[in-house]
Amino acid sequence: MNYFRLMFASLISRMLLLTIFSVVIAQLVSSFFLVNQFAESEEKIVIQNANNLAENALSTISFFQNLPLKYRYLVLEQLRDLGGSRFFVSLNSEKIDINPIPDSLLKTRVIQAVKKVLKRRISENNNLKIEFSSPDDLHVLKNDILLKDLPPSWGAYSLIIPSVKPPILVVQIEIAEHEWLYLAAILPPPYRLVDKSVITPAQVITLIFTTVFVIVFIYLLFYWQTKPLRQLAMAVSEMSIDLDQAPLIEVGASEIVAATRAFNRMQQKLQRYIRDREVLFRSISHDLKTPITRLRLRAELLDSEKQTEAFNHDLDDLEMLVKGALQTVKDTDIHENIQAVDILKLLEQISSSQPDKIKIVAVEVTLYRGKPLALKRCLANLIDNGVKYGGAVKVLINDSDESLQILIQDNGPGIPKNELEHIFVPYRRLHDDQQGYGLGLGISRNIIHAHNGELHLINRDEGGLEVIITLPRVYKSTSE
Image (tube, rainbow, N blue to C red; front, side):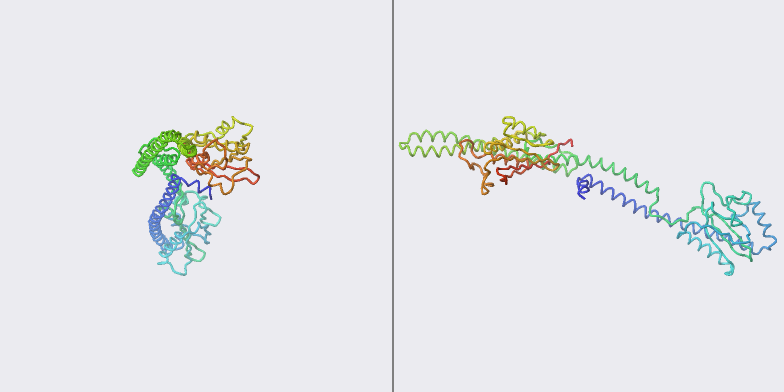
């Protein structure tokens, strides 16, 4: 079930499925009406031909019934010699067993029409047998003689058409005791006695070729029309981690052009807003350095050493905040293009400085589209923390079509459960070492969030901390 859901997840596959369904339904409906209309017209012609043939048969039967017995065989020989009748006529001493063609509604209607005409002048006391037979299986004269075994001089040519094998109407009537009049004739075209079908084999072949042609044509058309839409979706996906990408070209259908234009305008506004925010933030942070330095000088002029020390302590905190803010902007807002990143190679570069303390466990990792410098800074920060507080780090990579998961495990003291969420708050520190500002974890999580990923910390049951990074694989290259 999931396979079919994925197969028809794209717009092109769904439109092709809808097109196939529409073509098949349209062909079936049109074939149904056309076949019905054509079949009704043919049935009327067949019934009319049967009535005309029955009228001729009735005249022939009446003629032989009124003819004296001694002249009947003479007339039959003349008919065979001259070919003056549309019927194959014979006088038999017994009723010939006919191998009938398969029954159908039209065959029954034709037999009823013929019988209705013949019953107008034939007495109910006369045995009347009406049936249809195939030319290859038609018995004549006797039950052990087939039509195809007769010489042409016997009149068999009137029942044989080389190009087709139409059904043959056979009428047998007992005109006297042990004397059966045998009439056989071909119904005029169309030579059809089978019931109508909803769709013929020829129409099935036409339907298949038409559907294949429409599918190929529609696929090329949809692929051409949806290409700008795919580019728009790609740009929207990558905008969350690369706001500075070039504007999209406005091509395609009017709706796609409108959506592309709206996306370009939104991107331009966001770029302008981010630039203005960065400039303002950097300016404020930079401008604070001057008054901080001025206040330090003035604090040195105070007479009270206690007040001077208090002033300097407050100024140290303020300076740390300013430096931390500048570092946050510098480390988080990395302006680089999205590209295919070899995560395994990236981790090997990070571990090369201390290979005895960093172990990487991975089989094969496909390329991931992201910002390589940002990802390297994030992973290096987390791995360095693990080595710093845990002594050694083990990195495991789980790769799949949906996501890339990186697990960083150490053997350190871990983090208290009540601090697992608060540890990402800027300047939040659990140790008293002098290095750092307590911004590393927050910056790392911001970088992962910028890639639409998740970063979680958990304490391992066997001791130590585990960092779980999950990066979704939604950024595929345009060549795929």
